[in-house]
Length: 124
Image (cartoon, rainbow, N blue to C red; front, side):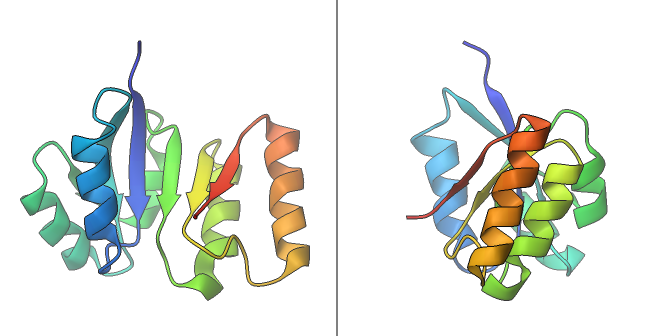
């Protein structure tokens, strides 16, 4: 089975759990290969602690053609924007909760994903 390449956007405290889960529990199906953050130094710090993960700017991560899924761990008010940017870049998205701040944003996100043949998921 081909492992799916994943990038994390948002390298704050909650990301530690995601790095661990993808590196330990889901390592046979997911390949966490990149992380990005508005503060590149935070992404670099996470990449240093996680071999095989490359630190990137958010723009670089979204442009990377190998990344198929973006795990969006940004602050809630940024979830919709980051998710829309990822979907527009041709990537499926998994948002930490909430999916979006408003129902309208969430519905627009789902409509864009359906239009592009992509998936949207969210915690919990």
